[in-house]
Length: 143
Image (cartoon, rainbow, N blue to C red; front, side, top):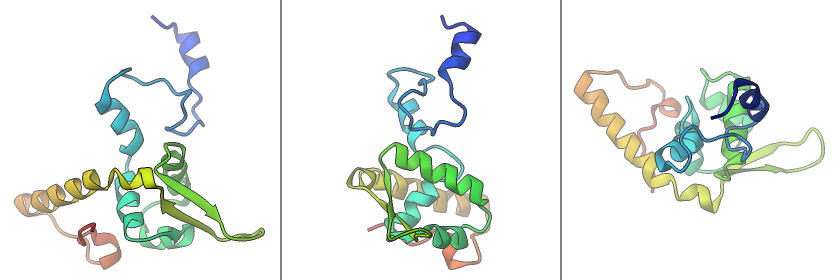
């Protein structure tokens, strides 16, 4: 049993979710590990967008208008810490930064596509509205 004082020492609130020093809420549980890596308000969507090609921060920012820059940065850092994406600096400061899936990141794409397909069915079943803009719609299948 971990005391509250020990717990607060273990948890660094600014550490990315993929940080190995972050305690797993259910040690040894594959579901908890998966949700820690790809759970989050925008992670699946970011992985979906990056599955269609590498892009820079501003491109992700334009595409995901409701995502604040702070949250976008946090989600990208967490995905990078888990080895799903990589951040590539393309020149000297101020450098354009490109984000792309890593080979390991491509292994999660069947899950992302499965969630996308299920989401389409769920929208149809519940009479949900699809996004009016192509950039936000997430309707193109991942190859």
